[in-house]
Length: 530
Image (tube, rainbow, N blue to C red; front, side, top):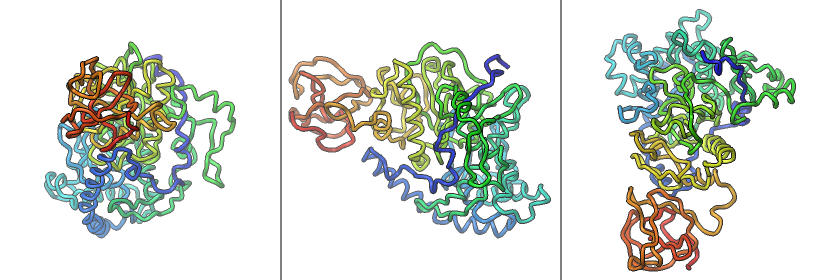
């Protein structure tokens, strides 16, 4: 253990987390997408998911009939936390951070560093593992069998209510036990507790979106968690004493009447918030190295759950890590590596980048909630304010994609898929870069014109002295470069990435580029005529 990890570390939890249990249903960002093309495609995908989900309520009823000890609503909430009611079919190309893959609508693990829930359930049910992986009905039944087993291990839980289910949920979670000398018990336990909390939070809020139906059921939180646990889950301030393997929140308590947090000493609480980004909870990862500079911010999708990621980043054979992790349901932030150290998240670029992982899967836009976008953008705005080389105005704002597309170094906020020397494609096709750019740059748009992004699929774009291909070339722009469109005019017709157009965009005095190679988020004109 390093001297760094022996230091008593302090952080603050996102303010949005404190009232999370009472904030109503989570706001999926599907109705707030800023990219029109992405919005249209996401709606098609959600319609397909709605059709896929139509049979799931019947499968849940069958599981409850076979395992009557499981409280109503628990399986639906487990499925929402694990997969957003999508039957996960992971492939090798979808791996991220080398995390164990989750399978099916219940997100069951199949070893790879976590528990072999698929194998265990196959033995309990007497069916082949392949059927649990392939069939939603058996996947749900498998999860029910595993949870029923955990309920049965507690003699006091004959027919438990949801609040009494917390210990069984923590055992069910499937995360790896800490190896000797790696992640200690308190942090590993916190990952399991966070998992149970998210399941109960889902029931407390209820869900009604794109075919998911889970009626809200008020949770008596003081019965589900003791006061110290509630403080850890909601507190604006949390300390991790790594040497003592103890998570401390000495400056806060839960008001027994209102079930809200109260500060014992506000001045002491403020003084203790000494980590890099104040609204972050601290859960240190042991995997970090020296950094050389602060050059850019990297956006990731973790391809897994928030609680599972906390467990994995504490103890994994590939030594992967991240600076910040954001939860989908409420935007809670956990910091795992200090900013002055290099996290292991983007290969050869580790020493110059800062990274943010987002809970969820790239194939389902429902993971990217309003709370998540807002929390993530807050972290990046902090980067832009603190580090001179990182500019929020130079963030990528082009179309989302599902392939590697290397962007120039001048783009300072971009996805994992935009860096050279890697084969990862997150945050992927459903991340709304146009919306994210607006959150990073609040205030009504680009001064002096409209924002645009060069889109040439890798080829430099010629900048002309006038609105046509007969004008002289006065420079070039790299694919992915951000531009400010001052005005638009008609010129030579050009066929490019976005079809054929005779519109030319003036980006400076005597500097024009064809609109056919410029992403603006609109099919028409976005500025007045020149």
